[in-house]
Image (cartoon, rainbow, N blue to C red; front, side, top):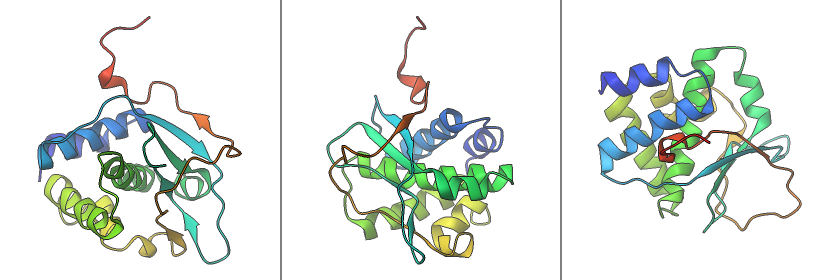
Length: 165
């Protein structure tokens, strides 16, 4: 467990800070990183049985998170941070070129265990997300949907900015 990363996540005040914890966890665990990503929030839909938590459209610079499951988690800040960490970690790994869902799920679990510990809620979500949101599923990599109404999160990938305008 990496107390610095766990503390960074536990103290995070928003999505940009949660993402900084994600990037640090990946860098420490794999030595890999990527700059220049954006985060969009959208209603990704779903049906009565499945709701996608997030997606990374292949060969883009955007991660899109589904607003609906985030809203379900927002009442509990600890759960919200753990959920957002989990989804952002999963999609960030896709943005690093890992497209196989099984491989990404395994890496998400390994990185969560290594950096946050086995008992952390984000790690438990990596083991079995359905325990927390019974009908959330992972999206398949796909091309960007031009009709998707995406709200960009300002200041998302802030560690890549060397100055403020």
